[in-house]
Length: 198
Image: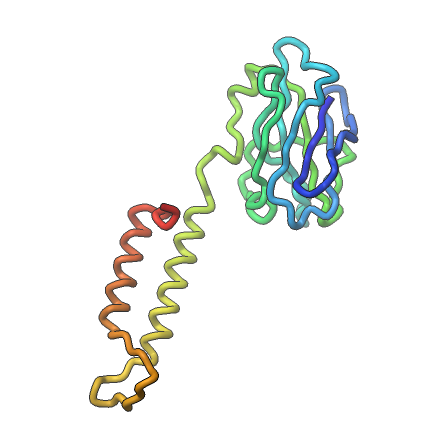
């Protein structure tokens, strides 16, 4: 009834049924995967009023945590999910579900779980991918630290004009120009962390 596609790999339709309404896919060597497509094969539709909640699990020392990615239904039989950021982060255990004893804790083995649930219940769930973007704050912090490090590094080479040794092959940039750029970039990053994408 279900299949998944990981970029660069063959289609998987070998879901294990772990109980009456839960199915599990194993994704070996999952370190470098970024997206996964989950779809219905078309052999059998969901019963009326039901759909499938799609969960992702990446093994952790404390045990697997299942994160809700989204859902598929008869009206939306396939979906693409970005999982690259979920493999390392995901402290949020929202949407946590357990998929029986078959859930693996082998490192490098990710899992996709599909839980057949009423459509009304699916509509009330908030997938981790559409909840607040937790990757923005670390990105802004990283950019700030990187800019500060660059500015400090470049400033350490600053000399006054009287101390400069003439060198015709060297290009010099006034430290005030670097300072102005640094301040402008910080201001723009605080106003809109995604300004650099435009």
